[in-house]
Length: 406
Ligand SMILES: *Cc1c(COP(=O)(O)O)cnc(C)c1O
Image 1 (cartoon, rainbow, N blue to C red):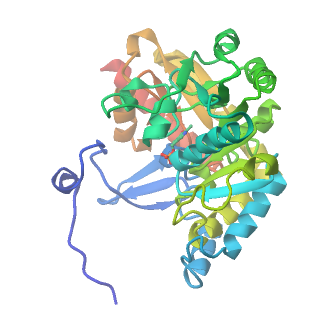
Image 2: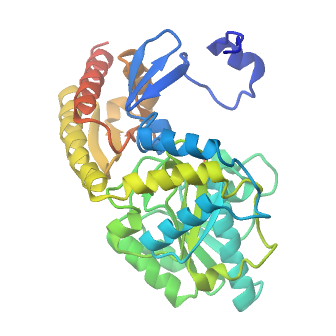
């Protein structure tokens, strides 16, 4: 028996929701693979992936199966008890990475919050309160809690909320000399996104990450990689640090880890983890059985040569066609990124107009993303079918043609 639900529309958003978002005019109601349908039955191709989250598209049978199986077993017990899905997931992450310990939470911001608190705790325990400074990068994004906006390098997200967390400085990204000039024995951690996602899909240089690793070692500072956007297959490796061959001390993951179910993880070594002793940190939902059951299924599918090699092949397909479109319509000058995190840098004539490209694509039945005002971002499912890539990029080309001929 289905319960009759009151009809709702986009206009309701402005009546009942806090106005901190400006969602699109249509409401998606159903998805399958890389296709999404809205309330009117209109079909769209999804190259946005819920902001690099729906790593296996919509309604992937392995994830639906894992979620429904767990839903019939056990939803929640809190961290007063442990649970089987959480332990299995921790084993999987530890087996597949540098890490020896996992902490689970519910979002990217929480994973970073745990990472920053751990870094400060370790420094406090080993060296005393003086060593608490965190160095982050200009334009970085680490989440929206007060600590994570304070560490993030974007004043538009951190200003206007009263005093920020102190002891944080920001240096230009990919600038090793700037990091070298800033780091000192008071530095407890350096935090870097291997690819700056939100602020324009800017990949780090290999030498930059290598140099950061050396500087951290020299100053007894921890190297934190925020892999909330780059992790879980997005770059064609399980984590981007593997692509670069530079190993962090702490890694944060979320987004793709749950494939659309909220989960975050902080990964680290045993020697560091032991500083978070009983009672020092926690979260009610972290390691929730439903979330961990889904993440286990995500890991089983994503961490396979077929999927990871597929990401590299699909990257080439996107890049070649996007470069062609960019050149033909004078819309963008560069296609950058790694794997299926791709940014098209708008040409001077279209600078600041990523939103217009988003709107034009939506009119053609295509969901894309912005990464700041000057970059159009693509973060599709890692298993997006080649036919959907072709069709989606046809739609994108039609959008580019309409936009540039208007
Ligand atoms: C999305 C993102 C976050 C924040 O994740 P939430 O789940 O929104 O809290 C942090 N860091 C990076 C690099 C991200 O892309």
